[in-house]
Length: 161
Length: 141
Image (tube, rainbow over all chains, first blue to last red; front, side, top):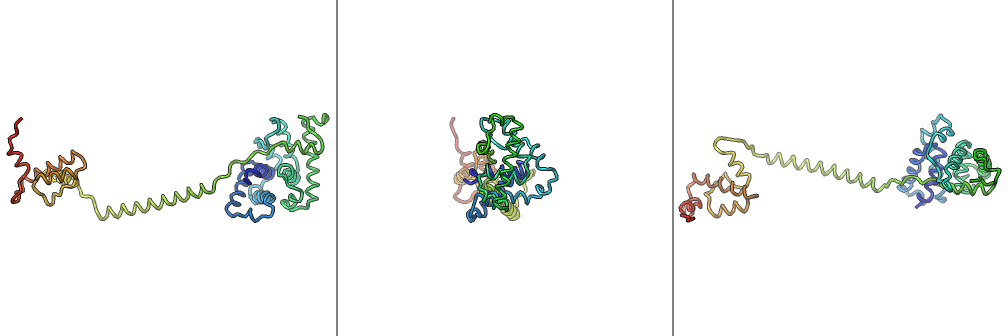
């Protein structure tokens, strides 16, 4: 149930950290299987935030992710796999969004994914990333502005809106 | 599709649905498979031990061709006829052989083997050989 509900956002969050879909997938599976075996999720006060924090910790504990020398941006851009199911099958917009997210700084990308697709409040994001809620909100505003700029410059639609 | 401004841009981004991850591997299936493997392995070990013990305790009799006909006797012994204590072929023993035999061919072989053995054995008092009785009878065709 939780897996169906939060799985897609958790996977997206994991991709935004790891850069590779397969590694992200493994991390999400690892977290859920551990949760099922230990029953730790039932004891967590905020199950949703706990899941995102667990996925993040699992990836940061991954030696290969920590020892990555290539910038995440290039890893993300090299991966051809789609992250989203776009509205109206607008695959060009999906690619544009993926690229715009890839060029964001890591901390801003994490906040953006957690707030928009994870539907976490800034207080919950603060708990997951161990930062203040104000910092989370600030990073989000910067990220949103950059995303919009990147997507508008690529698509050239902003003048119409 | 035109990209909207402000809060509408946020709403626009939310329309992009993240793709679902692959289904979670079932822990129960994995455990069940492991349990079945362990059970199978232990069963195989137990079966090997039982077979080894049986083979050591009851070694198979060596069968081989011999000119005096002991091979056929050994075959008859395996099929149920006791050659160590040969008895003359009577209707009772023939019936018993037929009842115990696994197939018609085995039964006929068993009866024939016992009939040839019974030539050398004198029939006991009050008993008659079925072969002798049958040979005395005159059948009209």
